[in-house]
Length: 627
Image (cartoon, rainbow, N blue to C red):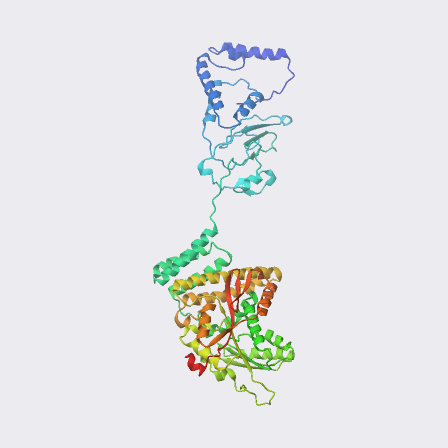
């Protein structure tokens, strides 16, 4: 089917009649050609009349039974706007139209590069083709044909191949539903084919429209992979408990793959648990320096401890609440003595020194005994910490004395070591002297004693022997010391997942506030990762991270002869104010629980501060009673 433009229109009627006469004479000369159709410009043999009529009837039925809403408009447009000039064979022409209408639709494919302007356009899969003779430059025209949308095949319903955008969004690749916002459909939701017959600089464009019903695109959600990851971790823990090392080995490899699909805190905590499981399964030697107790790792622990202090409010909360309880217990005392079971860098005590310096009536005489493990390089780190604290005390005019004790275990301590040679119930100075008020402080130190039977009872007996006015204890609010391995693993997975979430939130807020939060967060994650490795991969005396809940510590302290001391509401209010000042403090929660204070992330308590004093009913030899 062709459409041609006449080069000359000004010819007279005589010339047109002359041409028509020539056509009629040609038709008469061609034997068997129907004269009536020949007069209209169609050459149809009389022998083909029946077949032509049948084809035309079939064409009419095909046009009337079309499912597309725009078929009538299409063919009426063709009938009114197209002029046919002497087709050589109307039979073949009708047959071609029928074959095109009955042809099955083909899937949509990206259009090939535009052909050279001098060549006719050919069929491009789903597009109907029209062979157009090139017109003169001054007679350039545009023919627009509305084609019905072909039905989509099932295989094409989720085709994610890139679709070329129109010239307005050149260079942009559109996927899925994005094409609906970039490729504007026609008002009647159809495909439009614009063919331009123009000079060599012309171009052709194709606008693809969205289908009537948008089909959803199935995407693999990382949440589903996260659930599978947790299930794989639990299954691996069960295999370890049942000593099915072959199954555990396969699950560890699966966990490693699933971990890569996660992001943020989930990926990190799963990676540490996977490493801990692998160490328990394969048992690489030596264990030292990778989460299990070792003097060689003491220096690294101190470095990580500082970064954990900076990146999160947990240690700040522990120091603040313990100091507040000690400060209230020392009210009115002129001579005070604090025994710190975990001196480390002494980060807790500058705040207490400053609070004592501001006390009404002047600061008391302050003595500090700091206990720490031996250093691998045999350096005297405790004395260096004491020197810095002495410089601060001298600046704020406090009478300060310091003594450092190196001990591999708190169970090696005796009462006389804590009291020191200069301590007695009464000073021999004068009648104005008073006994020294003693406080014992433990922040994350007592749970490590549970690895050795009787060690905790020995230490608590030593504490009772020095008759402290108050004992402050800060411990993790978790049970990593009881039940089966699977129960311990499950509790640890929940606890450290929440802890890592809190670090992630705090680091984001710290970066937004002042920057540098990510570096402290990275070291803090290693700090917690070493604890995970110890809880999961170590056993026996090497498993020192034996955390217990506040309820369990109540039982232990009660058996050792201690009564609880309620931490005042003033400490609760000030701790809440402290968190409000901490970057990322929106997710942290301070709660008061039976006279104790807990700090957690959202609804999960993570650490707990409690205070104790020697029970009035306790008598006799406290150390013997503890044993």
